[in-house]
Each structure stands twice: as C-alpha cells, then as structure tokens.
Length: 478
Image (tube, rainbow, N blue to C red; front, side, top):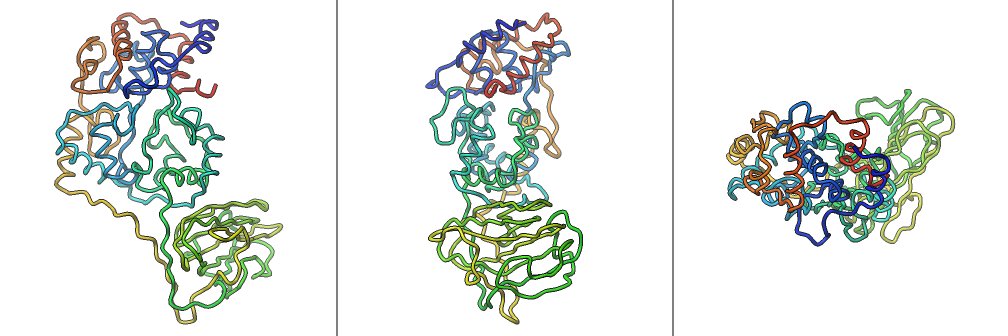
C-alpha cells in the first residue's frame, strides 16, 4: 500500500519507463508513467490493460487487484473501418499503430484476408447519421479544450513520450461520420472507459473527425431549370425540435427570396421548411451559419451541416462542407415555440466573406420541374467475398478472437488456462503464440506479478483508488 507521502513521491518523480526511441511496444499510459517504480504493481496493471485476464481468468481474490480493459467491440466493424485498414492492422498491429496493445496473430496471409473480409461484412442495420464538419483551427481548439491532448499528443506538436498513439485515422475510418460517432460515445466501441465520453456536441465531434478523415466534396444537383427564390411550407403545431416535415401536412406553401420567419403572421407554435438550391460558385470548403430563435437545422441534400435545433433564445451555430461548384439541394428547417422569432442564414467560402445568403445564390425548381436530390457518390465501397466471409467467421472462433472481442453475433469465447496455472515464463511472455511486442521490462513486470499471485491480501480502498486512477490515466490531467 502506498502512503500519501509515497504516492506523492511517485507523482513527482515518476518518469516514462522506456525511452521514446525504443522499438514499438504496447503503450499503457499508467505503465509508461509509473512502471519503473514497482515491478509487481506494474505487472498487475499490465495483466489488466493487456487483457490477459480475459483469456486467463483470475480467481476472486486476485481479480480484486486487477482491472481488465476489454477489447473493442466489433459487431459493426464494417460500418466504421475500411477493409484495407482492417487487413493491415490484424496482420501487424504495431506497424500500423505503434503502441497498440493487440498481439500479432500467427496466421497465414490467406487467413488475414479471410478475417478482414469477415470483419468488413459486419455492418450496422441503420447507417450512421451524417453531420457537417469544420476547419482545422476549430478542430485544434476543441482537441485542446476538451482534453484530448492530455492523453494523446497535441494536434500540431511532436509525439510525446508515453502518450496514447493515434493511427492514421483517414486510412482507418470509412467516413468522417464513423469517427464522429465514436467520439460522441466511445463506450459503445470501447466499453472499459479508457477513452471517456467527453460530452462533445455533434458539431464538435464532426469538426475533429473532418480534420482527421477529411470531407469528400459533394457533387451538385445542377437542375436543368430553376426559378428565383426558395419554396417554403408552414406547419402548425408545438415543436421542441425540427420535425420530419415529410410526415406532416403544411397549412400554407409558397416561394420567397429571403429565409426569415416573416413568411407567416403567426407568433408562436409553428414550423417552416425552406428548400431549393444554393449556388457554390467555386470548388472548395463552405461554412454555413444559422442564427435562430428557436431551433433550426440546415441540410445540403440529406447531410446535416448545421444543427442549431431545440427551444432556445437567439444563438448561432455553424458547420463546414466541401462542395464542388454548382447548385446544391438545400433545406432549412425552423421551429418557433413562443416569444421572439429570429432566423438568419449566412455562409462563407472561396472568395466569399461571411454574409447572409443573397437571393441571387438561391433557386427553386421551375414550374413543372420535379425537385432533384442527389447524394455524392461515396468512396468505392468494398464488397466482401461470401466464401472468405464464411472462412473468416470460422477463424474468428478457432483463432480465439472471440475471447477478447465480445458481442459479435454467433461467436463464442474459448477456454484457456486460468491465471493461477500460468507460468511466469514462456507462452505469451516468450513471444509465441501471441506476439505482443513486449519490452524486456514489461515481460519482467508481468512475470513478477504472476509469481506474486499466491497470497494477496484484500486491497485497501486507497489501493483501489490509486489503481483505478492509474488504469484510467487520470494522472494525465490530474
């Protein structure tokens, strides 16, 4: 047990356990920070953080001293990650993401292919909802403000020793929306909480995601014939958020050359939808803004670019999107509960300083013309081979992937020797059959912890707190 004085000494004088230029090895922040102070305690940390105790179950007394970090959930891996990244990562985790805690499987190239096809076939039934992004300055501000830089290296700085490494996120994630969904709720993929939920707004998550993954430019609809202004539809009712307008019947419709609540004389309890096209004169990134009281949502096609929804006073929200030159399908939804009603829609972009969108940049279908809605072609999607998917499904069980990665439909974990029967040398600690790329210091710490399993007293509350804070990397901030 560490006293207050000894714990303070650890915090003041702890140093990374290994040099920055060492060969890639599993990065466990608590170990990098404190690993050189107490070999047995460091080994207990590694037993949990490397997920050893998922395969090798500890008895109840030992389990009280360990905190297991579960592997990522892969039930919808194909909706999140690209096939190429999945294939490369499982073949050599340390090469693709130096610092990864996943071992390198001893498989043949054809087996890696099959596993990657299987994982790429695991899709969520409902597509991830899209949202607009933002520029690099905004992404950097959010990254530093919410605490990402405490665990990871700063966005624009050199790698920091002991920091949790980031892979090539553009290669990893199929879309920026997939990364944004993870940032909004990391626990849905990584349930052990090492990556906390940071209470980001969808716009903040998309700002970071668009910086790392990029926003592919949207293709314009470019309708054949248009008229000046936008169409509008007025809906009666009490709304707390912008509704699904297609499920409602408007009480009034018409056209307008300005986006504002003045198209109705009602003072409360209504919603308006404005729709048509907005012109992007040049290829580039455009930022759209809505200032509204109450809520508003701006879409290009079906993509939510600005989410300023809800009942609130006058406030502005924004979002960015890469557009190809041309006329793009454009919708603004607005709700008014009571009190003042405000709605202003602005934009900026290549050669355009921030301004309200002028009538000359908006248009609607000409009489007799059907509205056009076209979504940009997605990046070439990967189609898994059914035969390889089936082979990969079998390998996921037989190669014991399912033991660590829980929740994949139809998969069951296999049994391993319990932790009490594990020797302090050989096996995973010898590099085979599971190659964790462990350092000599990590091997020694794990061996010391295994040798010390015989008689462990019940952990004190102070030990539980210290171990939890170390495992969750609380000391990166505190």
